[in-house]
Length: 342
Ligand code: TXA
Ligand code: MG
Image 1 (cartoon, rainbow, N blue to C red):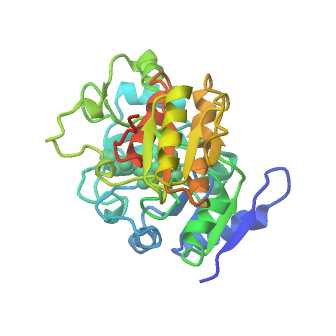
Image 2 (image 1 turned 30 degrees about the vertical axis):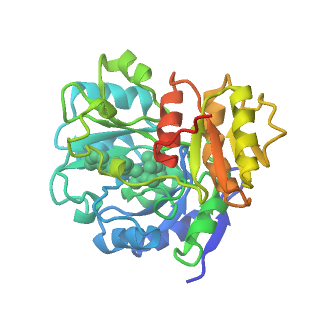
Image 3 (image 1 turned 180 degrees about the vertical axis):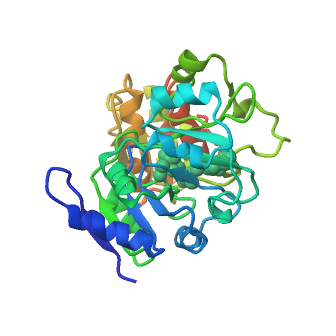
């Protein structure tokens, strides 16, 4: 299959490009498109065969439910059994935006492979002009996971999608670099209080300012079944082993020297203001005072490490405030929990 990449710059007339994407989706094909978080790989959520193509293209385990994307707030009532006052307040405050709400679903509306093994459905309205225009022209919901091969960092540029899925999908809409750079916050609205299953751009503080106290899933006992099935799989991993390291210039230098002494090459991912001339590669991803900027550039840096000959990657940790929680959540997964101790 040949993969077409189409640039959809909203400043020009590109009705034909959107129509092509809509026609392919309506015909049961998959299409990659930008959202404000990461690129998604969409298929019409009510078409089981189309959704199956997502799992095939990504190599995604079939027991991991997909998020349903909608183009208008009102559509949520087509899929959610009931919408609590808190859910309404969150939708009003943060939609369109990087927040996925999990509801009990009205059965037999979305295809069964969108929500394998669960009676709930995760829904979000993305805040990106291309995603919104696509959804509003299509007038159907799109099931869309991140448009990467399973296990790889999520794509924040069309080029990342092409690298992973070239020849496996027919069309990529190129809307430039995404904004947030980490996947949406997922919150389970079926429990009281609601539980954050995956931290993201909409932080716990932002949510609590609207609906009061909520819980976070990583506080749950590990013996409990994962609440968000995606939590149990390896994620975001670059090819070389990655270790998290404290944001301390001296300690990082010591680590780099020790690794190089073993005859190994090392790439470091960290803030702009570290002086890391000793590392074989240094990927500066933003000011250390600006976690949003670091989050926006993290996945790109993880992918850039794969273009080096690094034997080992060190990634500098941030604090857990605001988006720092989501940043460290993804970094811990990419590192499989490992830290480098000097
Ligand atoms: O920002 C995002 O959310 C991106 C863009 C494309 O919208 N999408 C995304 O999808 O990250 P994906 O499939 O890579 O991650 C979806 C996560 C998984 O961890 C999955 O387990 C969880 O959301 N999830 C989806 N539906 C769920 C449900 N009904 N109950 C619990 N967890 C759910
Ligand atoms: Mg993903």
